[in-house]
Image (tube, rainbow, N blue to C red; front, side):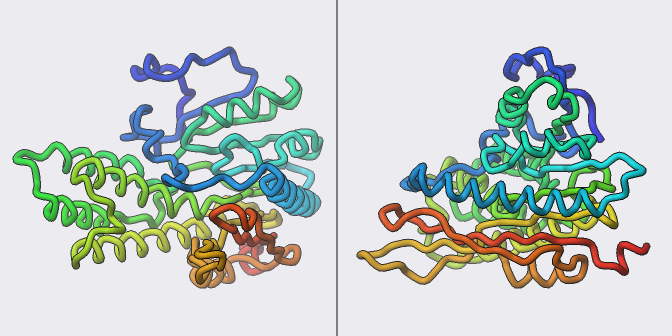
Length: 338
């Protein structure tokens, strides 16, 4: 799956690593992604975005943790007790909306794997656990898209080209890069047979990662904001990015099906649309993930383990209201019998 982190030539550029009582490995999907490029790949707030108030954020965190725990407990109950019961948390980040301590406290879970492209926030969360819980934790740095290294390399080569491409040629070059990306089967090798798989706000990050990385490269090289560039080349690039986003999201559902054990369970939750105020009223909601395509893909592999739940967070005084869905899934019987 990977090598223990901290022993390669780029270690000098990384933060100091304290003595650990948990394991950290670096998956091969991180090849081609230098440490200094990670920040440019991790989705961040766009300029002008406002983080919702602590009160509403706390309500969202509470809803998220409750749903994750409920699915985890149902999944662990289903899992055979004659073999190790493992959990995996994808894009764990700082675990602010993940009930990490409660999961670690569950004596029925033998191992918890936390996956993220940037281990720094994950390690902070793990170091907050008591020693005896930390020992069942594994951290894996991995690129869940599987295309990060290829994207960084291709954009770097385009930016370094001599003579420098014109703004129009640069946009066409980015479009060619996007068209050449293939996402099928590119996810990191993280094993399988997990009793519980957690995908909390992952798909919207998969959508954001390549898009914001490329938008930043375009702004840096051309001085232009992609969404405000008129003309056919920019429109074609935006359409290509939308297609890439949908492919990454549906591929993520396929990936979840490969991780979970036949008698396990999956927590799948994400922001599906955002409402934005205009003159005291809210415009038409903006889709965040490709709900129809996601639902169709999920229906091929999964049935509901628990009823689907919806909630919203944010407040009318802020500039966004986030609509969230949460699904609790189990592999379909025909797949479980294979």
